[in-house]
Length: 309
Image (tube, rainbow, N blue to C red; front, side):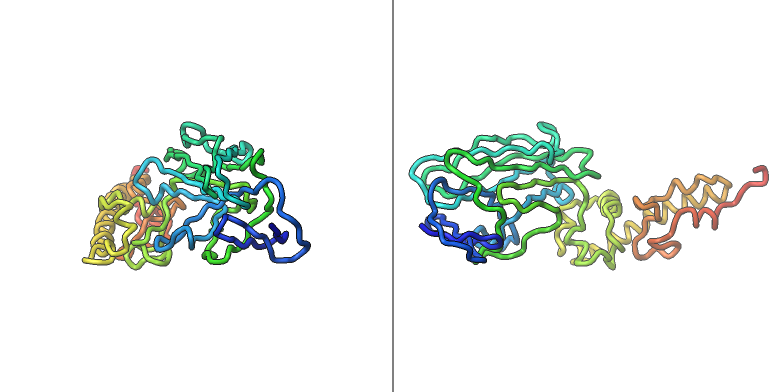
């Protein structure tokens, strides 16, 4: 069995699970000895499948888009070489100095000892991750690494585009690209939902921010599941209703603060709702302030000290 050594690209022969590496031909050599093993995690658009999805260097779980308190993670491991008629154990370890997730509290269910079953050319490594309070501002990371052993070596330094698969490799998180390593990232930071639209700015809600998104859910009772469906927001005038509910509530809060300022209470601004960056919470339809207005500006404008101050 012959292969070409390579640095940039791996060609997949589906039949027999044979990987032939190539892009710069250096030498021809016999493929002998122990077969290779690597992470072959795939995911992508819902209309695709494992025959089409790109190989990914990491898995990202966004609890900011989920209602559930936990999520299952599945990592596919593939082999190069031939299929055998017996089980072949292999080992996966957690790289502690590249991991900050808390065992048992933020993840569980991982087993180091894994196996490629007889007649198979892949296996799946699984675990469960959990939403925790710190993940609203921190991102947890678990780094997994396959260990070479009796049945498998680690022959590849990187894996390039595999013909027949899509090339939409994700790059939101930086990784080293080592095929023997796979990272799992997860957090609870709210992401812009599909119902917000294609851009950061929405004609219904203004510029996206996690704080504004959470506020809109709190004030309307709509959930992440609602906001993740574009039709739910854009059809039946729902987007307008959500915006108007927010306008009414923000105006009510403003009036409470205004009344306190007019009575000489310099802390009246505490009635107002602010973005995390300190500006006034705003949605289209509010004309007294905009997305860049600071509460200090409004306090200066409306505060009336009393005569005895």
